[in-house]
Length: 137
Figure 1 (tube, one colour):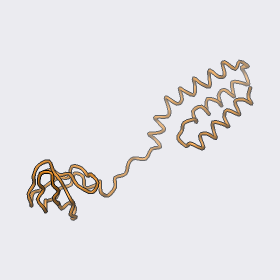
Figure 2 (cartoon, rainbow, N blue to C red):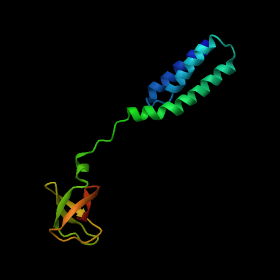
Figure 3 (cartoon, rainbow, N blue to C red):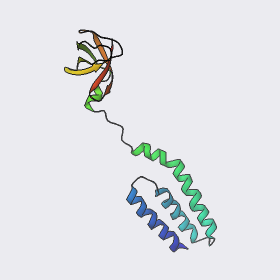
C-alpha cells in the first residue's frame, strides 16, 4: 500500500508546484501520515480516512493563518497618498461639472456634491480615475 501513497504524494506535489496556491500541500502532509500508517496498519479504509480527515483539518485550520502570514500588505501608490489631504479650489466646481483644485502642489480635475467657488479650502475624499472627489473643509 505504501506505493499508492507515494504516488499520491508525487501527484499532489506536482499539482502544488503547478498552482503555487497552497491548495494541495495539506493533503501531501496527510498522505505522508497515511504512508507512515500503512507500515503499521494494513487496512486501506483507515489509511484513507486518516488521509481525508487530516487533510481537511489541516486545510481548515492552517491555510488562513499561512495566507495571512505570506500575503503582502497592499502598498499605497503615490496617488493614494493624497486622499485626505487638503487643498484649494482653483476653478469653480459647479453642479455636475468639473472644476480644478490644487493639492500637494499639483492641479487636479475635481468634482463635488456641492458647488464650490474659487479659493474654497477642500479635502480630498477619493480618486475616480484621474479626478478627485472633494468636499469643503
